[in-house]
Image 1 (cartoon, rainbow, N blue to C red):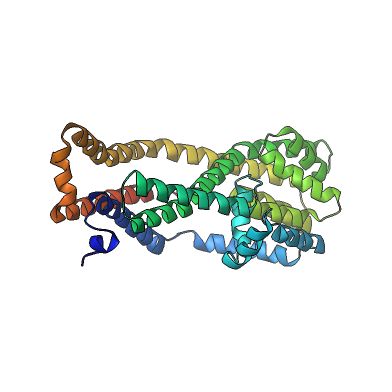
Image 2 (cartoon, rainbow, N blue to C red):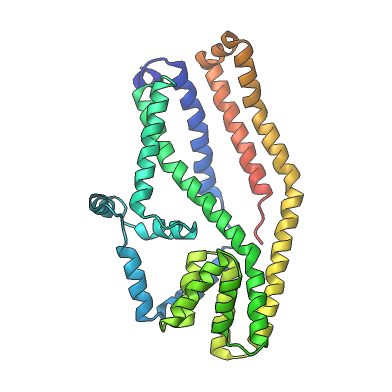
Amino acid sequence: MNVFEFLGGPDAGAEALIIVLLPIGCILLLFGLFSGNERAPLYRRMEAVKAHHEKRGSNAAQISIARQKQKGSEIKFFDNLLKRVLPRQEVLRLRIERAGMSFSIGIYVLTSLLIAMAGAFLTGTMAGAPTAIAILTGITMGLSLPHSILGWLIKRRQTRFIEHFPDAIDLMVRGLKAGLPIGESIKTAGQEIPDPVGLELRRVTDGIRIGRQMDDILWEASRRVNLQEFDFFTIALSIQAETGGNLAETLGNLTDVLRGRRQLKRKIRALSSEAKASAYIIGSLPFIMTLLIYLVNKEYLIGLFSDPRGQAMIGFGLFMIFAGAGVMFKMVKFEI
C-alpha cells in the first residue's frame, strides 16, 4: 500500500496537493535550520543591556507585566483551555501588541480554528481531497495564515514607526533647546507626531505621570516596539541619565544616524527591486503556463499529475522553484 492509497485512494487532487505541500515544508525547514544571523553578537549585547535595565525595574513595572499576563480570553472556557495548550502566552500577546492590535489571545485562537475548519471544508468538498489531506490542509492554514497576517501587520507598523520617529526626535531636540525638560519634550512629540510613534510616546508620558521611572517605561516600550532605532533612543536616554551631558546634542546625532539608516534602506530597496521583480516573474511563469495549458487542453495536463514520473518531475520542479526564490530572497536581504 502506497501513501496515496493510505490517505484515501489514487486521487489526482490529493496527490497534487501533497506534491505542492511537501517541497514547501522542506524549504521552510531547511531555511529555519540553516539561516544564520551575522550580527548576532551585536544583538546579544543589546539584549544584555536590556536585561541589565530590566533587573532594575520598579515594582510598578512588575505589577504592570503581571496584569498583562493575567489578561486572557473574554471567554472563561477558552481562558482555562489556553492555559493548558499555550503555556507561553506572553510571546503571542507581545506579537499582538507589536501589531498595534488590542484583541485577546482567545479571539486569535478562535480565528485560527475558524480558518482551519474553513480550509478543511473547502479542500474536502471543492477539491475533492480525502479526509486526511483536508484535515492536514486545514491545520496548516489555521496555523500559518493568522501568523503570517500578524507578522505583516507588525512589519507595516514598524515601517510606519521608522518613517516618523526621526521627526519625533527632532521635535524633542527643539523642545530641549527651548529649555523644556525631557518629559515635556516627549509629551509634546507624542501629541504632534502621528501614530504609532505618538501612541508609544503618549504611553511613556502616561507612565511618567503616574510616578514611574522613565528608564523602566522606555525599556518596556522598547520591548514592545522591537526596533533598533527605538533601542538606540532608549540607550541614549539611559546613559545620559547616569552620566549626564548635552542631551539635545546626543539626540541630534541620533537623528542623523536614523535618517542615514533610513536612506540606506531605501537605496537597498531600489537597487534590489530589479532582482525581486525578476524573481516574481520567473517564479510565476510555470504556474501561469500550467493554468493556460489546463484551460486549453485539460486531458493533456492531467497525465502529468496521474503518472508517477510526472509527479516526481512536479515535485522536483517545485523544490527548485522555491529553493531559487529563497536564495534570491537571502541575496537581496541586508542587515543595516
